[in-house]
Length: 112
Length: 115
Image (cartoon, rainbow over all chains, first blue to last red; front, side, top):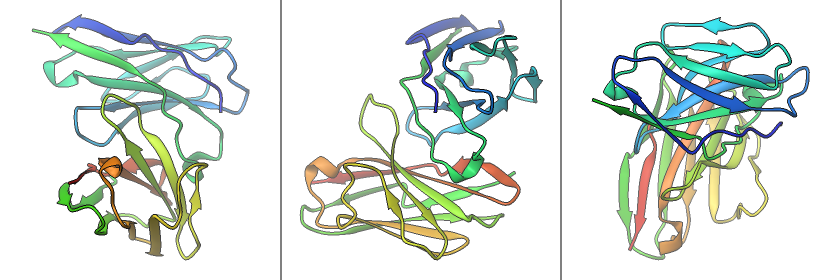
């Protein structure tokens, strides 16, 4: 699976949009971009995933650049409960048959 | 949505004893389950992958005789930490995938402290 690079930490004001970047310049054509988050002392929570098109669900939006070398996770109206470590993971089309390789992620801190 | 239940949420045991952690998929059949370990201030590390009815596949550096994994049914996998030592103290997390849940749902984790 391709390696990802994320900023170590970010701050965002409550109520504002949180934009979390991720670089995955070595991503291959059949690899998806997944985002998970981990709130302190809990298991990771799936947020969203995509291949090449932008995706949106009730939690977030995922913007993938045209060359697919980077992506941005957008939390449109951040709340204090969104404070967590966010992991950007690239994985092959094997999907659920493969374990995930977690990097260090981005510690997002939502400020009141 | 898909729910994975992990039990216990925390456990304290004495050195040399064994501890069993359970991971259950409550509303779907988990053909594949994964076990991860997370040390303080570090990221999750995959320990092993298990498919129902098959022997688990362990990642490099994970002792299969120390971390016994059983995946005897489509809804239950167990991880037994045998002869636990203080250095085994960690946060253990399971994940399950299968059927309509292709990308894995995580349990809430088990905090193991070996004293």
